[in-house]
Image (cartoon, rainbow, N blue to C red; front, side, top):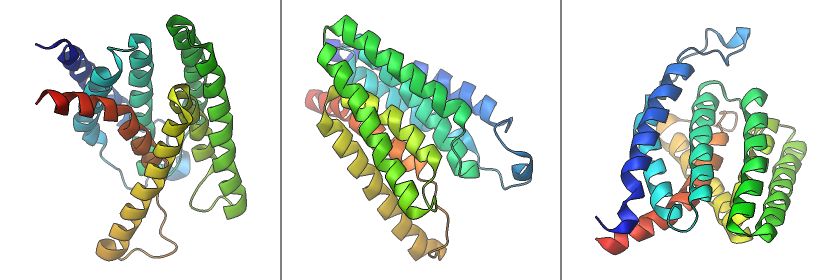
Length: 227
């Protein structure tokens, strides 16, 4: 087995375990408010397919150059999967998950920066979190929190930090990808579901997918190069 393939099995296994564990917790619906108790239920079992693949690609792409950053991206990927499932279910990103995630990412980028000897990346990560959080917060203020909420702005802080750790280009591409994915999704809803201007769309999953696609890209390139 080529060295670059070595992290793949571990990523797949960890992703599957995380998916099964997350699904069991999500099915309790403990994140729902009382007035959401009777809302339609979204099945989170899609995580069983998504998390193993995402974790495997993240492991292949990042482990050879920075095992510590690969671990941080792995934790982030799991967090994004859980938050996406919740947002799809109730169109809300709970503070009790977004705040701890931000704390984990802050600690994570500091530790990774010290281990890898890249203190400048720590500064860029913190600046990226502040910039992306402010960008989304401005949209919430301008839009009156319609279509995009404070939860998205809080999640943006974590995304900006972990993406910014690598480069500003990562922040830009992931953010652009989120909007393009949301655009395609919205068009699909209009064409096939008869959605209108007042149709609510959870934006958190688009943000998460944009970031994960950027994180998985090095793994995809590495694997394709070996085929």
